[in-house]
Image 1: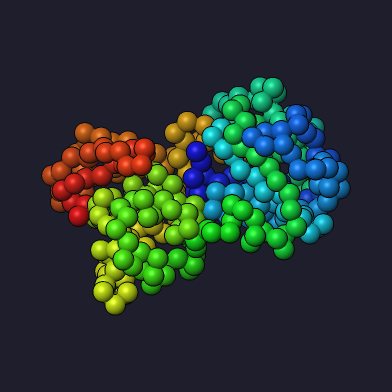
Image 2: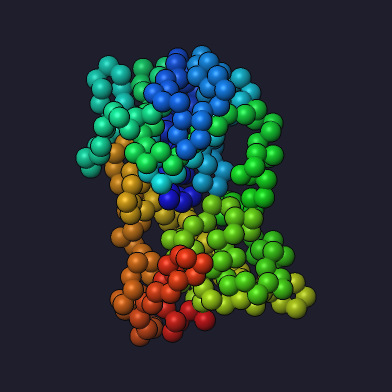
Length: 296
């Protein structure tokens, strides 16, 4: 499933074509995705202007001048592409072939904006993604957002705040980081990579990174810095293209080429000062990759 860097990459790819543009028509080619579309979805969106594109955790937010917001989740295989209507060509460089099988094109935003007439097409072979629509003022009460923790970008995430969430917790550190109520948007890949950068074991109890008085230990400060860095690095190269993730211009993300532990079982640890080997264990049904020698 696409993680935060992939969704942020999609947001940035769509922004030039969508922000400030008018949605002339919203075309729905089926009645549902994972869930049915909102009531009168096409009528409520058609004719509105997009005032901004945002993101909350792994959700794309399309803010409309009607005061409503489209919430889009990519699921397992969802992707957007931008096509100029006149030329029927992708907007932007097209470095990698991708499927444009129309039977998987389920939603089409017909856009009128600075780039002329374009189609923003949502394609989803498995149909695990979904779209919803609600007033912007109600976003904080949206079921998926109510319990979300701070974003791992910007200044919202800090060691003191995380210490308050981890204090006294015996839960494994990896599980605590995957808990969206602690940090919003972190997924399996980037948690593994951040823990390696911070030199912390995924099986270590989360509470051991906090002092008896509730202050963050140096290990937790280091972990927060590693989380911020790994997310920033992944966004800079367009995320990780492991299976279905492709950017809006058809190119693939490249962060998978810089993995230090994820999916590297049996490889030598990338830490030049370590002679350990990357191991794989299973935690809560998910593969965890780490070096038991330098991650303590």
